[in-house]
Length: 639
Ligand code: ADP
Image (tube, rainbow, N blue to C red; front, side, top):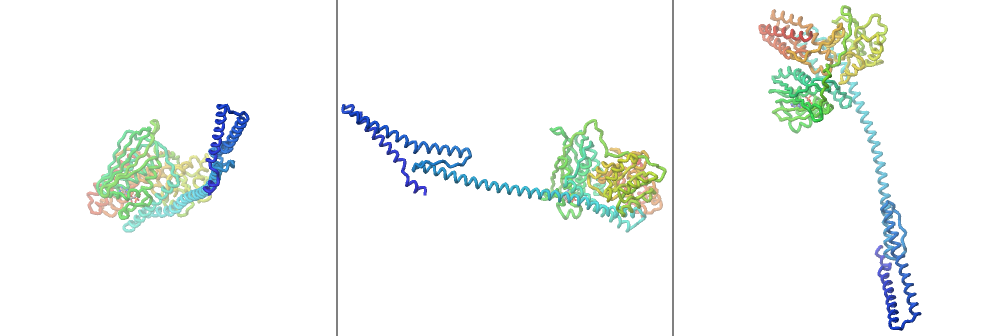
């Protein structure tokens, strides 16, 4: 169509022909001049010719202006407005030539541009609408996910309570059975049941820890502590396990500064997890813990912990998977060793929560090296290194029968606790919830010496009840011990913050429960603090991570209390050649060693059992002598 139109128009060349006519006029003028020169000039002819020339010049100027200058100015104005973002058509001069065509083309371009701009605008609006819808959908999905995650952690917390409550009953009853004179095969069966129940409990605790970390509810403590003793304690705690497998366990510390600010319990948990894996997956050779502390450029301290073993190793393709939850590198090996695949997932998250990272190097059949690097702030020089916070126990009438208030809604748990405390002859009253407890305290004619408080209860829960008790100044003296299935990390802190004095996590063990109660009933006796370095290898078992230090101290006291009776029984049995009693008693001491004492205590108990089984009573007597000395050195620790 464009070409056809061009065809109809007059071309610019026609305008050039107009110029040619001007040239002709010039020729006329020249001829006139020639006339003058030849004296043949006629004025009239000259004037007429000049007039004609002027007229033609004016016509040409007007013609050029109309045809070229004005349309070009309009076009230029149009281009300027496009440049400024205005898409307006220009007024086209009807010159009927290329200029008109140019103007119309320009206008067509403007129309096309405006149309595509409109299209773009519509697309943009559509896109914005879609983005808005998507954002809304995503927000909805995010709220949904958050609510689901919240519901998940709440579900886990509740299920933990629901699971731990019957577990409490189960373990409590098993404990009581084992405390009674059951013997032979039956004892073994009950012991197996107890071990199974404890593994179930470990699994439950792992799931709870992980869910708490994932729900972002893990709160890290910031207290001054000694880096070296945390790692060294852990190594000592696992010494017995390594020894049992015939593996050498080494600990090495490199660096000057050991006092830092941070969360000792979380560090303990990290070291314990790595070390227990190293021992678990190593059949022969050694396991070593190397802790290096050095200064960083930003003024912080960097702690690097290498846990090295000469064990099974991990295939390269499995290495990236082992930090995933519920993942094990080799299901056949794991079947042999047990485990859940949660330990490293928890460890990695704990390391990262503290701003650190973890890596592993491993070769199948050669062993593995797990390296953890965590930054710590150096503890201010003036700040003393504190042990976990303990309330000073209040005085109670030592001679009189102690009055206890047990606040617990679950009938099975009530029975378990009452059965556990039967032999102590306390006067125990039971309240089925917090409100009932407050009423009983209100109405009491004789004051209570101690409250054992469950946390999750109907009507008024343990935390609220404790706060209500603490608001009443006349009950300031009253020690409150939380006895709860809320075993998630951080629950201890919540109980202490509410005003409780100590925390025991269910399932409660008889020895631990009695130890804590006695501790708080004991008039003016502060908690026993175990010296850092002693001749005795302390096993501060992993339970210490979750339970109160007072509990472990209490267990130590309790052990010392019953030790003379146990020693006497052993000595009588050795004198009579009674292998059965010797082996039963040795087992009991071995179990107690797990909780409080040393590798050497555990070893001695085992050695007595073995010698008795072989009928080697001479060896038993020698071991008994060593045992007596070992117990004496423990006594020194508690004084
Ligand atoms: P668990 O030990 O309960 O199975 P973890 O998360 O602690 O779970 O470990 C995951 C897996 O990583 C283990 O099952 C094992 O296959 C592998 N693993 C961890 N530590 C070691 C180690 N020191 N040597 C060999 N394999 C290891």
